[in-house]
Image 1 (cartoon, one colour):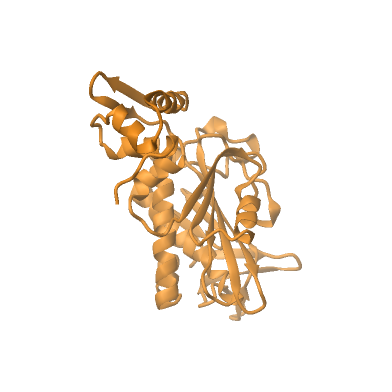
Image 2: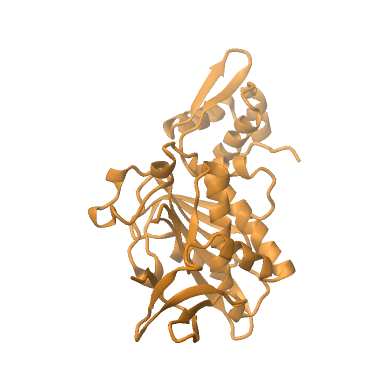
Length: 329
């Protein structure tokens, strides 16, 4: 179905779909039911946001360049006809996308709703730890899923998200990414992505799963606080090239949609295999640091429930549900 222009965002999408061919200003005005002056004002607003739009006499408007942003129009351009994403809610700056996603889910937002921001001022990770969310340099995004599953299956979606983001980064930037249980992605041993999964549920069914992702994309070394300089990295630092954030975000969303459907149709076995194949934890001697104890041993795999299994020195197998994983000396 052909896109009809009704506002600035749909005008932008129309110019993108034109693929560099001019689009008549009069045609755009007729479609939207507004004056050509109103269309011109939309174009000016796009230019103020960093888009380059050229006006060709007697032919129309041509989109020549787009800024590095995560606007709905740019995400839709890369998503194309992917049916997983139902709605995109965009912010320049927020405290965190997670509470917004919770509120939207409670208010009836459909499966596949995405909340994305250029900057987070109160980004957080696991155990409410702060997350540095540099403006315009990363992907700070929350996705609402509404699968028909019991609550005990929800933790597996953290592992689904890890596999999805790992594949998306490789597709977009061609760098080697590894997964550290339960919710970190590493490049060269340094953290590039954190995943936060939260739940809204009744005793017997999930109402919503909210997957929050923080991906360091185009940061330079000086963008990280001093305390993170040795433990954090970005895709740009590791690949040596800037990355199209909208293309990467769209790849993440496509993969989350694909692997979520795969899980619901075929169970956890295919996800488990992919996760272990890409794991930076399996086969290593680790310390699993929990609130009341630390378990040391070799990580040997994950269960069908996504629980990490560690073989201790006395040969016992311990299941680890939640812990900080550190290398053991």
